Structure formats: structure tokens, C-alpha cells
Amino acid sequence: MEIKGAVVAIGETQQVTEKFKKRDLVIQYAENPEYPETVKFEATQAGCEKLDELREGDEVTVHFNLRGRAWKDKNGVNQYFNTLNVWRVDLNKTSSEPMKANNVLSNDDAESDLPF
Image 1 (spheres, rainbow, N blue to C red):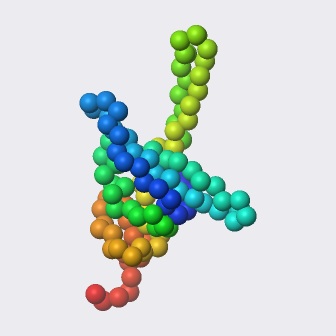
Image 2: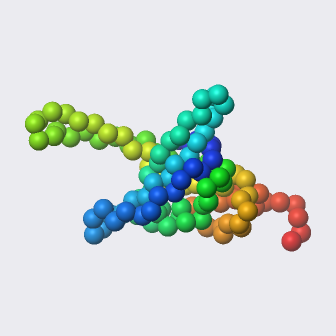
């Protein structure tokens, strides 16, 4: 799945366990401009460092997987949660600072006709 929007916030990396870390990415998209939506995504493991390249206000396309889990709480009641797990982010509009190319984050203007 993918969605286009503007970066609102980039969280700090959280070391959840010795072997697992995660980081939030929040974007705002406006399918209906009168009612923009603010959506939180989660990057995990090596994806956390890839968010270092982004800045608030950057226009991006976020590619993600929708994940869900169920578990029984201490009272035996079924509980559920969803996660929007980022696997790639493309920069759509150049920010004030240049962005380095890498295998997860890319600039859509990379294939230009300019000779330099």
C-alpha cells in the first residue's frame, strides 16, 4: 500500500528490546482537502535510520504494509491492534536540504535531462 502526504513529525528511535527498535513517522494527507488526515506509521530495525533523511514539511510517498495482531489480555478478553509498517519512503518534492540517495529513500527527480 502507499499514500502521499507531508511529513508532520519524525519520532526518536525507541529501543524496545535488546534486538528490536522502532520509530514513528507521522504524515498528513488530504484526500479531501477540507478534512486532512494525520496518520502515524512505524519503521522498525534498519528502517529507523532511513527516516534520518526526512524533514518536517517534506512531501513524500510512504509505502507500507498493514499489519494486525490479536491477543488475550490478563482477563482472557481478546484484544486487537493494527500497525502501518513502513518499508519505503520516496521524497516527492525537494526540501531545503539535499537528500542523499539510498536504497530505501529516493528522489523522484533523479532521472532528469540535465547534463550535471
